[in-house]
Image (cartoon, rainbow over all chains, first blue to last red; front, side, top):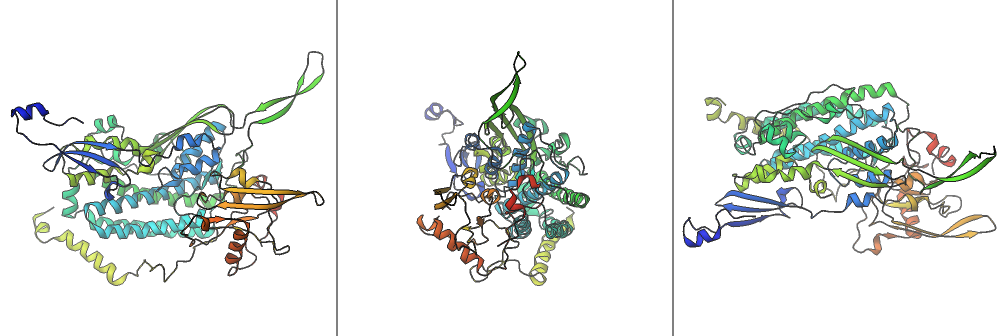
Length: 409
Length: 180
């Protein structure tokens, strides 16, 4: 990192002599949403330069995936963005399904859409709660956690876990919804829009909230694309890019929803976009639930789906015809996962999550690459933070909605 | 924001009114945990491990097929067995689960052909040493006894035969299983 004024000049006295002030924010700073460390160079209280240091939560998920079979890889994805595990599960499962050419049953696709949207709600609620708490509104935190707790309880009923769901399986999902869950989801969808109104009453016009968010971290649409922002952070700048619309996966082509966008590209607009997205999510869940009743009793796992327990490279006996007209049985190695490569990208709550798999025919992927939204968003912090106060840096980190488990992999 | 709204703190008062309304009329959603324990909302929570005690033999139902060992993504299950030549079956001598390595995915529960292993709904088992959370066969059977004591019989875990899964994926014994 280069100090603003070069040292020699300072010593000669050409410029105003001022020691650059370096500050370490993190890795245990509570409002960095994890173990993010920021080295900040300050001039007074204004940020001159900011350098994110990541890697404190690196677990080597990409490498670890090379030793596990597809269904086990999905469990790794739970630990990426642990606030919306199911969304990651879906991305992994989609990549493997495209590789193995498996058609997912309609009921499973609808269920996946519902749980992905629930994950989006979970993530956005947690984002709103912590973002508001960072900026100074405590009540919203409690209200958001009330609804999030409800969603987590529904998740608990669906798959038996609250955070690391591991609910999606290659070729479908692991369990069907019980009637209770469907009923409770209907109830949730009915009540939830009113609850969003509560949050908006508290925040939308609140003068403190407006002062802390309007004009903070402004990104123009062009710059947002250059920085590689995706998801609500990009849409806040007015670019209507949404993977659910551009490359529909699961049952997103069956449902109707809007892609909300902002205008100014500041923190407030991104907040508005996420609030609108929560409404859209609730409506998507409702539409899917209506469609779910049409597919009552259908299986939720494809017949061609791989078993949980995949054999290692298997030997297959195949008959062959010799030139003399004799039938000879030869053994050859059978591919477990077909050779080739596949790519899948989804609209995770935080942005575009992409998975790229290469297989060499064994039961484990040869290479698995994950493109996580948080990693890209962290790289945008220096640009956004330049010229703002330290207190605004907290708002900027909050508005990008980063999770360090997601970025460090 | 209009001038009058700005002077009279309209939006702040709206917010305060909302919190006051919630304070007076809404029921509390929090519970005071150690005194009051939230019941597990539905059966099938993936908590502490247990080996099912067969009501007929009083021992584990495990047949040492090692499917759970192979499917475990974190390699936390360790099984040893001897071959009984008279009955022509395997007898488990050692069944260990390292709960600190476990990721609670319940894949072992799903692949077990005889429904011998289960993740119970019991989740308050924090320990102060590694040994406490290293379950051997006796401990696992004891976990089952503790768990099943106040449960309705026959008990059926949803992961033993997940709903909506085609029969092709289930071994024969699992398809007809009714519970213990």
